[in-house]
Image (cartoon, rainbow, N blue to C red; front, side):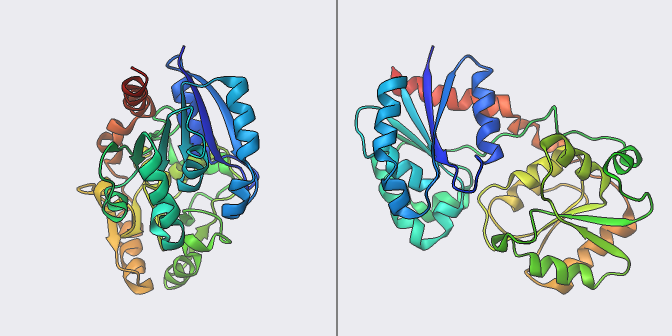
Length: 303
């Protein structure tokens, strides 16, 4: 059995859900997975984790280390016994201060995975890389009855509701712009995405009238792909791969970073009250399909 050591951050108190989802999809295809997590912040925090990583490698004896984010990739490559695959999720490429460390990881890694074409353009990898957005769980995220989901989530049936992409304290997601845009609309409530499990997020996406993403930067946001699976209308600024993902999807809009323009598109959706055809356009990113692509990369490296 192929043994993969996932190296990733846990300095926010938890592993990012999309990393856990991908690891579980790999396990489902007979890959042995264990984790090494970094709990300290900053480049010095990552470097301090090297001793623990080496101990974990000796104990687990992985065939490959799969690092998530550039700093994790840099740490993983400070040893040369086990080949490293690094996935870059956006903030490690979009932030110039972090990009310089990510470029070292790109050079040292056996293979590099980017979740958006924009990140490939910025990173300029020379060889051994692929564009593979994170997969989405098509079993959890699916169209459900709107009224039933409102009842389950405790939301009133006749309210006009818009779901923001994250918590309001996540400044990278630019909540100020989202709040300003919604304030221009009459009797519309903006909901914060915070403290929900995956099933509850799916129910929320089916309960609301629209989802809204106003981030300063993104890679390939799961939030958008999950909304697509639920056939939920989308308004987003032009970040990451959102334009490519929603291209041609009815009742989904890309906007300028303008509260007035965002409010205009939200109003169109609220007046139409129609869902989208997003699910049929995103099924190619089913999490198990993506897992098979990653396993092919593992196989090439091992053999």
